[in-house]
Length: 128
Image (cartoon, rainbow, N blue to C red; front, side, top):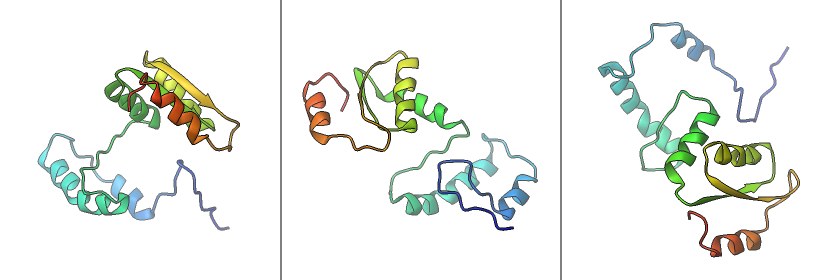
């Protein structure tokens, strides 16, 4: 039986080599081994994501990353563009972090109108 190829944010297929590496001893995130590992993967991951800037990793859930972004990057107000489950979640995270948030909501799978976004951002109420 063949395994389906999942083109979704998660769960993802895990290669047998990855499972084998995970069966080994853990390394501390403050030690030299971790520093060397982290440094060694930076060039490849930068190429994969198309950047020359540092790439940061987190072992938290997507929610943890979303919360970190909202808490650290939003000063004024969040404009959430909601067109599906994932973008709706951003609005929820914004509110749960105590940020003032407004959303442009469309039916799932429908496009957001760029004119509506420009109009909202032109108000100056939102971080840009």
